[in-house]
Length: 153
Image (cartoon, rainbow, N blue to C red; front, side):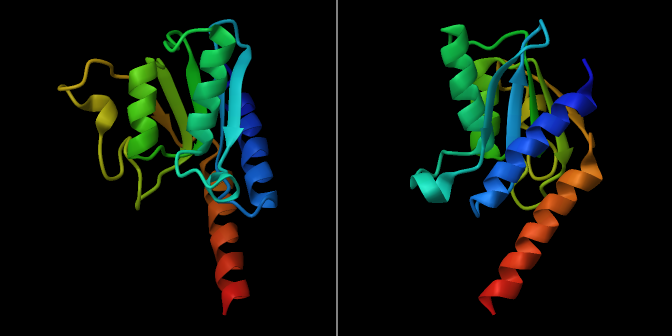
């Protein structure tokens, strides 16, 4: 699979979040036939739903498209390292591989704060790949929060 190609699709999803004044995180899920079966962007503010993270939306769509809550043989591309909630859903849905752009030192549950994919107490361990389009995904977040700070002062 071309990780950069699919990460660029996730970045386009993140741009939709940014345009909606949501934290710019985007995600896509690709099956073993290289077809996008789920996508999403952050929308917890506009939906009044704290679970409406990019990954969660993409997982819900992929599960509906597959008509199965198990998403074996899939890869999730997400612009920022998943949080605890999203890593829990990734593990429960049996996604095989997670590719993310930038680390999230405040919320990251893949490697930054927690290493859930490596936790031997859990029954599924997705492969984790980081750093794909890292500068671009990090800059999206950095500029979003810089603009937020400058408009709230």
